[in-house]
Image 1 (cartoon, rainbow, N blue to C red):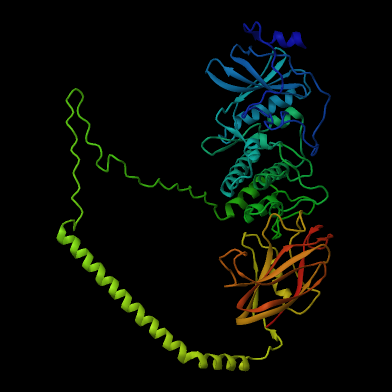
Image 2 (cartoon, helix red, strand yellow; image 1 turned 90 degrees about the vertical axis):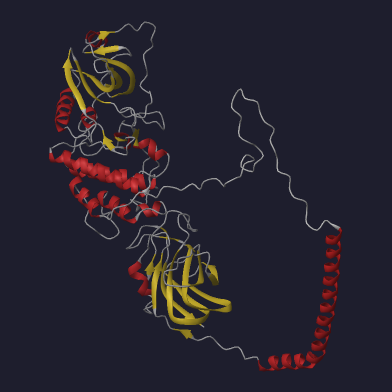
Length: 572
């Protein structure tokens, strides 16, 4: 094989150079994971007919070799399963290109050639273009664009989740591009973070259309569904910085084992609700769908239309940096004159002499002493009159004060027993924009302990880590003195922490830490009775939960940290 490969190329003068390894790392390399030094386009979990053939040795080519007397190989970026990928230089057009190389007798050589030529015919600028596909001298090679200013999605996600506007642009551009490819009968089948490039202008480009899958022998009976689910995985990773499967991949941690596919807002706080539901619709698998039970997206065309139907997400406002405070310089204060022209004598600088302080003459000094004496006399007279008035009032009011205090103590009302307060309405409170179960709020007021409002199931607990808390605001119809409450809970265990707060409306603008606290407790039971040290007058009462026990799987959510409220009553 080494002889056949060497005969296929013209060897440049590279005396003294050492062969490059397969672990060269570049941001725009074809399938190199910059996070862990392995091929990011390496083996994926087998599915949809992916074939694993016996490894065929990759052509033994080194830096400096030329293909077709034009493409000079410079750096090997992938060496896997009998083929290798290189960064090369097109000496004719003086530009960098990428090259896939494999021997002509490789079992997938014909498939790779056919895939490359089909991809080249598409000509869509949203894909990294195939420039040449050749079989020559027992060697097959595919030449494609190289984008030196582009950044892999893998590197972007290593820095953190994307902003909602950037994630919206990602799923919008990728779904539209793949919908166009499928209309021409082309599938990708290997849409991973390393296959997505973001250019300096903000455009997303897809590389390896049909070719990456052909190089690895990946096939699928449902190519549109496979590509749609892959786009959903990319969106999920962009929102949460987690891979939506149990195994870690592409420098991202997977989901906790045994809990299934969690919604993005259960993995990370503050996830955009519409984009999170869109990711779940694209990832619909084994019954996992969006929270509003909208139909799953099974083709890139359907996903593209679902993105277009969303309200447009605007980019974040640019941060405004206040200019530095104005400081008056010594030049502006007049200490420096204009510079004299070079070569001219410098005249002395005349500094104005300040005028003398006023009233420095003999008459002025006498006038100052006279005014000072008059002021002292006036202050003494005024102080004497004020002290005399206060003493007279103290003598007259001694008996009246004692009588008034005694009368107030005799007339103090007796403490009354609290009475039930009627609740006129309720609404879920979610300052982070992610509700738990808005339709179930009314079930906390129906007097039926078998119905309840429920939270979602969270991975971490009992204390909520990705949210400040969850809760419901109750409207008493008018301002009432609230002194006690009884609350029925759905789940027991270690442990539930809740509190009551007085708020100013059903949708308060202030965060939950600012309203006035009425009462609070931590319990392992399903019944909570709260009593305030002093009644608080308010119309709106917030029931706020910050810790929840671990509960098993039920009809609405998987096992995890969660709670439900069955019945709420207030007294005052």
